[in-house]
Each structure stands twice: as structure tokens, then as C-alpha cells.
Length: 108
Length: 125
Image (cartoon, rainbow over all chains, first blue to last red; front, side):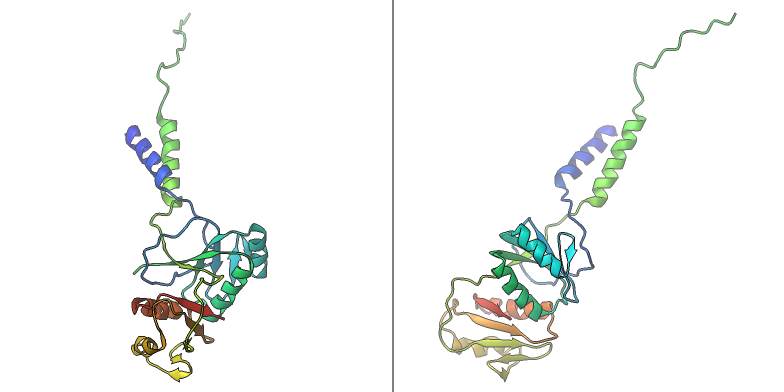
């Protein structure tokens, strides 16, 4: 039995990907897509338009983003995130030097 | 006098505490791990290399409505109405969302345009 348990333990160690929990409830928008989500820095966006990055929320999140300056960013935005703010956010990210944004979706 | 035999430690140490710890680790990793890769749509904030050319192609997305260059158009007719305005798939189509539009709605419209063969979509503030 201990052998099997060790085997399971090793399996979970290898297969697991420990992700930081989102700072607020996020329901990803659903869409069809095959591209896997890239690893790296994650920017969270809540339904009410609040941003959060690396534990900083609000305007401080963009400042934190500026100091880290990732080239590739994962954006986990709620399905109800206001679309006009997304456009403004993309413009802000372009100004910060982010070259590519992966918008996380859930496939139906 | 009572002569006790000398206390001898067991040759084989008990495995029970180790099994306990291993179980604890196992349960921790089962709960903390996240399986299944999320999918992603890749956006380039700096804009693609495509240059805008040709007649205006501005799709304004409202919570319920859809306007192409200011004229109301239904969601089903949008792709057909855009077709005469484009030369090829690389022609840029500008998407602008009105206040109150959700991200889900923007993605839905973008995906239907993508499915209709328009590859180059730009999200304008």
C-alpha cells in the first residue's frame, strides 16, 4: 500500500500545477479556442472593472506591472468585464511594453 | 530479585508515522493542484502589422445592438454586410464597444467574425 501511495504522491507532484488563487471570483468568458494558456504573469480583472496583479489591486496593479514589465501576460478577466475598459486596458498594456496578451477563456 | 531482560529496540522501525506524513502530503497535493489547461485567445496590444486600408469598417457593439458604420445591422447579417467592404481576409475590422457591453459579448462577436473568415480584428477604445 505504501508503494501505491508513494506512486500517487509522485504523480501528483509531477502533474500538479499550483496556481495562485484569484483575488476575486472570476467566471471566464466562454469561447471556442484551442491555444493553450501560456505560463507567466497573470493579470486578474473582475466584473466591476477592478484589476489585480501580484497582490496589488486597482491603480497599483499597473504600477506593479510596470516594474515587472513582462513581455507575455495572461489576462484572466470575468465574462462581465466591461468591454470598453478592455480596449483601454490593452492600450495601457501596449504602452507598458507588453507584446502579447493571452486572454483566458473556457471552452464550452 | 526480579531480573528483567534488557530492553531491546525493535529492529524494524515503525512505518506508521511515515505513512501518515505521506498521506498528508498526498491529500495536500490533491487539493492544491489544478488540473486541465485553460484555453486562451492571443491578443497583441501593440496592434498587428496589418495596415488599415479601404473603406471604413467600424463595428460598434452595444449590449443588445450592433452597428456597422453607424447603421443598425443584425448579428446574422453582419458578416454579409462586411463582405463588400473588404478585399481579403487581412483587411482590418475595427471593433468598438459601447458602455455596458460585456467582455463575453465582444468575444462572441469577434468569434463569429473570425468564423466568417475575417482574420484581422482590432479592438478600439
